[in-house]
Length: 294
Image: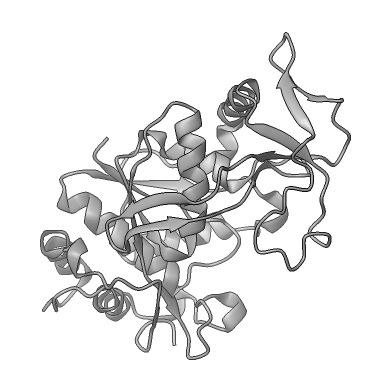
């Protein structure tokens, strides 16, 4: 499908980094005559904030970021994710893991502690561990090692995610599984470079489910003078505290695009998709952002 997709998490208001990813993905989709879809990644209730979805929608509308078609909510697609888990279990790709975050502190990748704790579907298709899973077990997928990513911004590279959690210890579906299943019908994914390692896991999930991964384009992530990602934790101003057009133009410049002489939002969105060039996006994982979110 010739479509792009923006997928915010409803954990708070949108900040500059979110806007950069949204502008890049929408311009890329529209420049190819495609659709720009909106997905809400609402599968982590403990992190969600009341009113965050409404705030996200209002912020996107304020910046002229109109999406095509209905909003897709991951919370409404849980059975699809369970089906994917059953398929992966049947292929002997999963194992149950009881390791806590504290036990893994300091480990850059999962060390394989629980790899021998197998998992298989029973005759009804339910997930049953060998021996039977205990409460609090997570489900991890075995990954072979480094995964090649032919990225349209960052170039050809290899990334390693380690054995990746697909269902958390609290029973919630994890991001690598849900996003992989949801991106199976997308031709090209444009998003922040902080998700490169997540892309490695998603490629493995998609291939083991029999799907062809999308083409990837990971744009730089905006950071402050300390090199920290712009967001609530670093004190970055939420987008609603900034003027829409200057902020859009700041995001456009951050993405390395040729200057636009436009006077309003309508003119920006009329001109930007036709002037968009993925080849101009800097091949950097992070970039300082003196213009946006200061």
